[in-house]
Image (tube, rainbow over the protein chains, first blue to last red):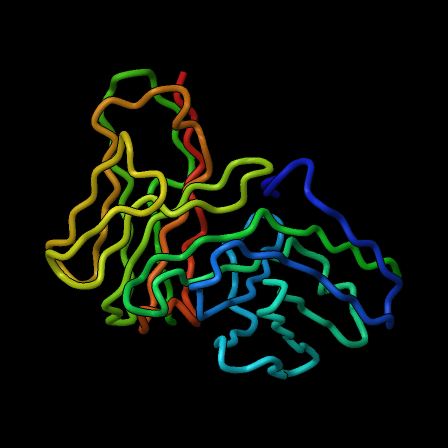
Length: 114
Length: 113
């Protein structure tokens, strides 16, 4: 499949462990954040989102935490499975949702070892 | 099946030869966008559109043009491609302007020699 990036931060975990992927953002005016998963050779897929008036949001096996004080976002994956191996991107909407302008982070490569 | 399609999937061309990458979505989404993906740089937004005939620049619009004459189509035009436009390109569409649940196409690998 296509290589989606070189020199990415990487995280390697054992199957069944929990994974935490981190993202720092720079614009304190950003008020909407999204996590995407990109498998090799495919386009990114939406995982979960969070607005700045929240500090935590949970989905199926995933939790996003937002710390506005230090402009930090994290994605927690519970009971990580081999199918979770992918590159994970955070994205921020810098216009507070007033337009469709998104800025993506550089991504983290998650490898799940069986 | 809900999908975003792009054509071509792979293209090798020469400097200065105009090309168009097509993008089409079947979900009746108002919002569409083009991104380029380069090693170590993540995805960068080139242009986006919030409705028919409404387009705006993203973070890296230089050297690109777009048009949105119909809701379903959002072609990316490179009038005079240069080697620094060699990249992996993704088209996306969304039902919301925040971009949540944004659907991405399969990507177009462009090489400009």
